[in-house]
Amino acid sequence: MFGLFKKFKAGFAKTVSAIAAKTAGIFGGRKIDAASLGELEEALYTADFGVETTTEILAEIKQAYARDPGLQGRQAAEIGATVLKRVLAGSEGVLAPVAPASPDRNPTVIAMIGVNGSGKTTTSAKLAWRLRQEGGSVTLAACDTFRAAAVEQLKTWATRLELEIVASHTGADAAAVAFDAWQAARARGRDYLIVDTAGRLHTKSNLMEELAKIRRVLQKHDPTAPQHRWLVVDGSLGSNSIEQAKVFHQSFGLTGLVVTKLDGTSRGGALVGIYRQLRIPIYFLGLGEQAEDLQPFSADLYAKAVFGLDG
Image (tube, rainbow, N blue to C red; front, side, top):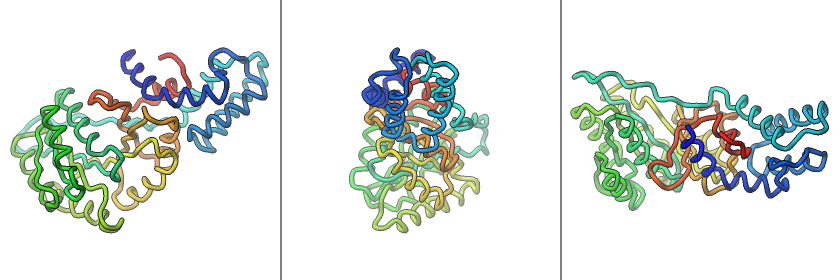
């Protein structure tokens, strides 16, 4: 757990630094006063925690300050972390264990959805690697056939991480690739099929229809597929990602979120707003560029990390 918390702290270092810069480091030992409360409010808004969450955090800190004018910054940080954990109750997505291998068992399908630039393709490869590290068997399906180089990008990751992949050429029918990949995963007895879907087509309606087509083709094999439909969101977009998530959720019925690129942004509070708006569980966070930097979401570790607390 200590090693995992180190990754969370490193992944949210820019958010912590931004909060510290705006509050003159109140969590480092200063006493709370009226001025520091104002600084903290500004810092939380800048980190994209949103109005509701910022208001709740400040209200509880102000109540504690009213009871104890000697309230220290670290105590305020602990209050903030407690509020965050309460807000994020039920937010942790957990993959259920796959059924034991049998001749009639179908693979569990995870459709990875998201716009170009969100980190969807690299996240698909990292997820496959992680599931394999945990003892699962995985097939990747390179179904982002519209974007130039997306198929090659996933192939490169698959080669680097020694992953099994089913792919065709750029411009191929994505649904046909998904169809072939499911058959291959089923024939080989794989636990998971991870489908990297398109991130952009000519119009939004084209993209949603392409996703729907992939879904229909998979359901010819298995009426319950894809069992997971995860949106990969670029965490550096902050609260702007909420509207993006709403569109995909309305069209495709999302079952989970993966929030990426959090190590490169000071807006680490955005995932709270996404969860509050949609109540979709968060399965993984992207906290760096390496395969092992895709980590399961923990509300406790997240809350402690963004407030600069120890694990």
